[in-house]
Length: 439
Image (cartoon, rainbow, N blue to C red; front, side, top):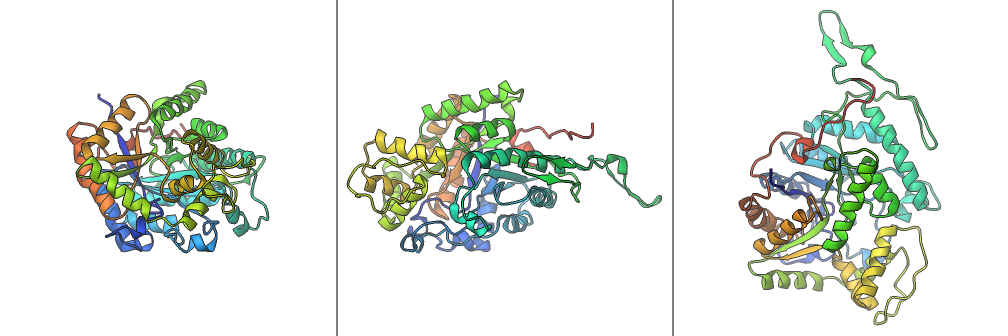
């Protein structure tokens, strides 16, 4: 069988680009309007996307108010509330949500995702994050943020507890025999009784095993501990390398680690985040991107750069090179990428901020044909199994992908024309996990 692409949609915020809400024709309140989010999800399902992916923040973004007042990400829905509502108005598309292993508890996360998987008929996915926002720590009673290595250590045990709780009941535990009055078979109930370094959780989970066995596990880390966590636990990775060479190295690294620990590399789909700007011509697409970038104010730009660095950049000379930055407790891979970009392209602070204030990640800017050419190359050269699509503005940016790019990919046989199944695991070609406690 020829290789085909998987496509998920990054939908919280509805666009990662700071200027998206100001673009001509854009829906300014799209990030906080159920009516519009429902229409986007249904449009994505019509285009046969694998999943609607909702990231999450546990604090208002930690940036100065002069920058924050320009941000369209100040408010958003709580993920499980929104995705449960979307489950009722969609039938096939997967529903992925972020849940933090740093500030939540395994029992809560296991129960919420099991519920979403049942409500949606087997379409849930859990994006495992180790929250790096210091303001989030303060929202959960911590004066200082949790150290980077400690966050990943906790995340690994958190995963073990959540998946163990999902396996509390055998798939056939619930007899519901009205004649005998037996609702479930106690022999098919397992009490987890987990006692570890970070968690002490008795169990069992008070909900039947999820439809998919486990909701699909998603992860984004590109740091060393992040890549190892992905190799051990993830089934989808949406890390964001900006170049094909870097993507190929990441692809080989993570899948090589999987082989080393006995996991099948085919059971992990690497879907880099990519902003997609479709035009009638390449020049038209570049003009759209230039207009979008022009809508980013410097106050927002420098604040976004500060977040990426984990260091206040507002006092830097805007027209000088980026000075030496001390190590911080922020995302290691994200900070390293800022430094690499600054030095590789010899950017001033202003230029670097402008890039981060809009969207600094991988972007495909062109016609449906040229973008399909690029995506096909990434697929064939093992830089990706597909992409996590970031839309430049809504609704037109999403419509351009659904109505122009997707048909071009389908014409080439690179993307499905119909869903092959009803669960997210079936869309992604992933096996249903065996219950570790029951054969």
